[in-house]
Image (cartoon, rainbow, N blue to C red; front, side, top):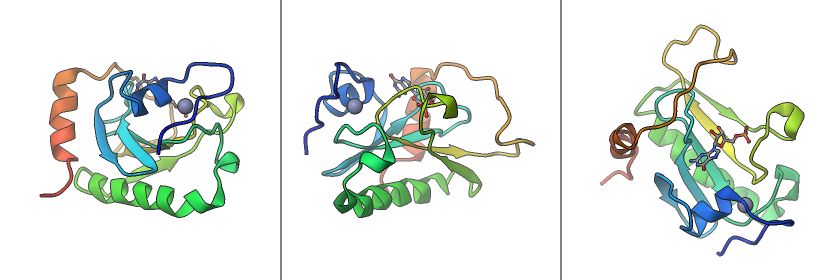
Length: 141
Ligand code: 5GP
Ligand code: ZN
């Protein structure tokens, strides 16, 4: 399914869906896409999105709940390879920290951080680190 164009213009996640922008893609099916977050909190921090552009969970058609949750669960199972401790997070609205207004769940592996919801320093994901993580999280052979 093609991503719809967001109201009012450009959306970086729609561009990743359409391959107009680069992304370290981990998973794709007819309706969902998952890729590495470019400013990861931890190694393996990834995002799961519906391909269709919607701003918020409440805008997602109910018929897409099941496939979207399926994609999220597939990625959670892969993240179990890195750590069985992770946060699944959804920021809704600017005051909740949403900066990209295309619905996305974060999956953030935890490796012993004392305060998972505390502010952590973040550095831009390097291509070298991304290649190694993509290999760890690739579809099982
Ligand atoms: P939000 O705060 O909206 O819940 O999270 C948006 C996430 O998207 C942030 O963690 C940010 O690092 C990530 N992000 C922003 N722009 C890009 C991009 O161009 N590519 C990728 N892979 N991630 C992005
Ligand atoms: Zn979009």
